[in-house]
Image 1 (tube, one colour):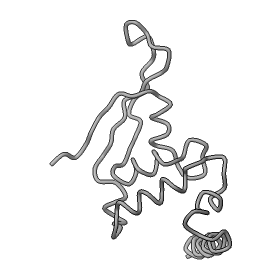
Image 2: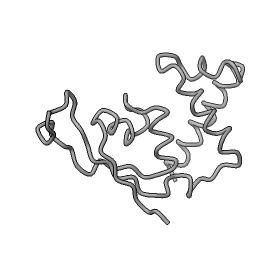
Image 3: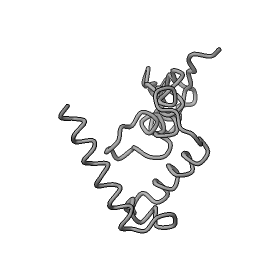
Length: 125
């Protein structure tokens, strides 16, 4: 069984893979990658390491398996990933607007507020 995957990718993409919630780089790619693996930037590779040097920086990224999926399995993975994709469909829009096609705005606001209060209670414990 494969326990780790190592890839060399564009540095900007590597930042997106390892991004945490609340940061500018956090999005669908972050959630998807972290659901299946635990990504880590192992090494930033300078442009001069390649011939000819590329226009962008690179990084060696380690993906350790499994990711959050092991700790938080979902009943219907396909629907979960579709939902996450919808949440990040248009980054400039709010979550309420992105989910408008599947939920009334007030229901989304209510669920979001309930979730925030649960997180706050969990943090205090």
